[in-house]
Amino acid sequence: MKIATFNINGIKARLPALTDWLQDSAPDVALLQEIKSVDEAFPREALEDLGYTVETHGQKGFNGVAILSKLPLEDVTRGLPGDDSDEQARWIEATVIGDSTAVRLCGLYLPNGNPAPGPKYDYKLAWMKRLKARAQALLDDEMPALMAGDYNVIPQAEDAKKPERWVEDALYRPETRQAFREILNLGFTEAFRTRTSGDGHYSFWDYQAGAWDRNDGIRIDHFLLTPECADLLTECWIESAVRGREKPSDHVPVWVTLDA
Image (cartoon, rainbow, N blue to C red):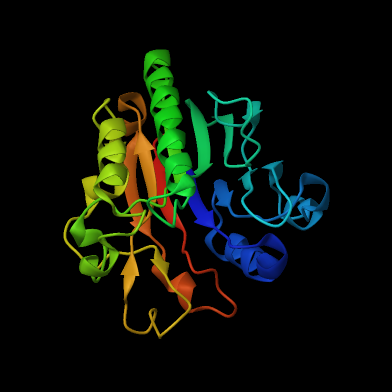
C-alpha cells in the first residue's frame, strides 16, 4: 500500500500539477492539505476520472484537507475531536482497506501559529493538545493507524537548512517541539527518521529568494505511525523532485509504503 501526504497549496491553482503527479507517481492513497476549497467546489470529477474515491473537508479560501483513494474507504469522519466550536477544516479520517490489512488514516493540517507568541500560537498549542488526545485514542484502539500531513513542526535542528533563522518561529519554538515530542513519546514512530538520518532532507521550500535552488528548506510534513502500523512499514521517502516542476506547490509529497 503506497500512501503519500501532499500539501497542494490550492487545488484550483494546482489541479494540473496534481493530476500529472497522480498519473506519474500513482499513490494508492493521497492525503492532501491546503485544498483551499469548499466541498461543493472541489474538482472531484477530474480525480475520480483517474480512479480515485474523493473525500473532502473543505473551507473557503484557506485550510481544507482531503483523502484520495484507489482502495475502499470506510467510516470517514471530519474534524479533530475536542472543540466543537473549532470551524477550521484541518482534520479528516477514514479506514482504508488493503489487500491484507485495514489501516486507519488521519490526514491533518496543523496550524502554523505565527506570529508567536499570540492568539494564533495559543490556538496551535491547543490544537496539538487535542491531537495528543486523539493520538492516545488511536493507540488504545490497537489497530494499524497513522497520522500524516503538514504538521508545521520542525522537529530538530537537522530538519532546517538554517535552524538559527527559525528560533522564534512558531514552527520551531521549544513549546512546539515539546508538544510534538509528547505525541511521539506516547508510542508513535516518525516514519522518515526510521529510514533516513542526517540533514539536507526537506519537504518545504519557500517561493522567495531562490530557496529551492539553494536547497534552503525545512522538513515539516510527517508520518506518525502506531506500533501496529510501524510493523507494516517498508519504506518512507520524500519525493523532492516534484518541487522543480511547473507551477509547483511549496511542499512536496512524502511517502510511506506499508505491507498491507
